[in-house]
Length: 145
Image 1: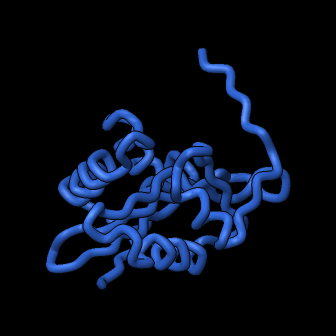
Image 2 (image 1 turned 120 degrees about the vertical axis):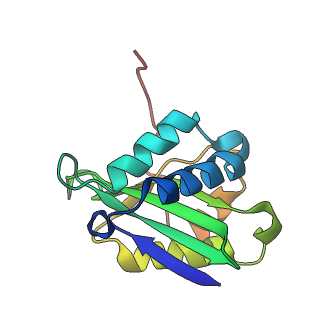
Image 3 (image 1 turned 30 degrees about the horizontal axis):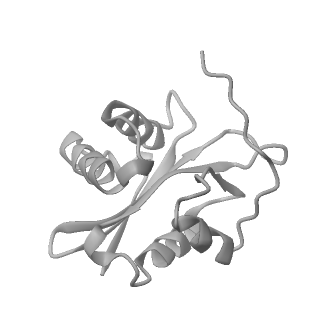
């Protein structure tokens, strides 16, 4: 398995961004978002001029994306974690083989500071996050407007 980490310094092409967004849109399954929001998140992660930036970890095999993680930096620290893991997806043919864990480890190695994520209670990935040390300290509440 090959791994690539994209940062704002990499000048990632629009084609590569679209390939990552296409992959996430397809493989996030019922836990995903609209395509335009996935692309907005990718743009945020790769922009450190107008935003805080972040990074993207992509795994691949034979020129095919097998997994991806998108981290956005929050610009905060101490009271809010410095990073938010917005998306992680593993290709359906590679699930259950440790790739999700490996992507998370690569993410931990790259991230500076704490990481938070949101996970739906019925998402089976929740158990992986708990095994890796994530805890559920807060109940999330939102006011959507």
